[in-house]
Length: 164
Image (cartoon, rainbow, N blue to C red; front, side):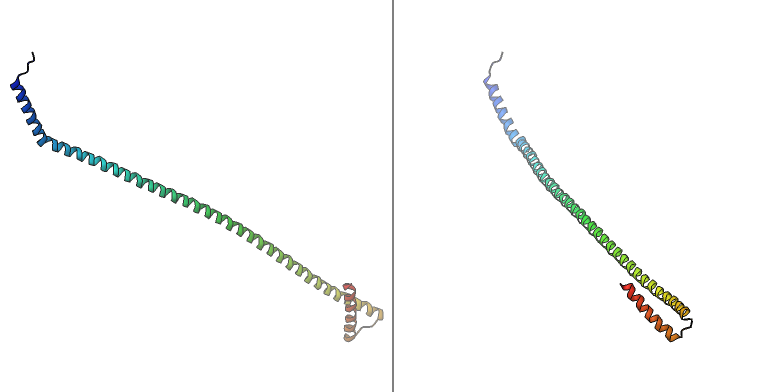
């Protein structure tokens, strides 16, 4: 069935070699060029992806740093606000104590003033009553000079008794 014919084999080898040369000249260069282009495209895409990934990682790290700084700053602001609030609270309490002390002091001064005023009024009334009583005892009316002298004496005696 299958017999090898030498003429057919020669022509088959020649045809095969011609086909190889034609493929070499016509198809091999475009195919290798296409494969090389595909390889370069894939390599460029991988490098671009690597650069993009590195850039994304750098941005992520930058955002993490910014977030950490923002948190730290927020904590610092809260801490400062708390400290400021405590200082204001202490200042308000101190002012309230000072004002209450001033109010107490003014009240004490007013009490002392009213006390002195009441003593003076009391001295004047006692002097008037004493003069009236003395004039009834003496049954004579004192003149102005005698009245003043008697008043001075009585006031000094009452003042001495009060100071004891």
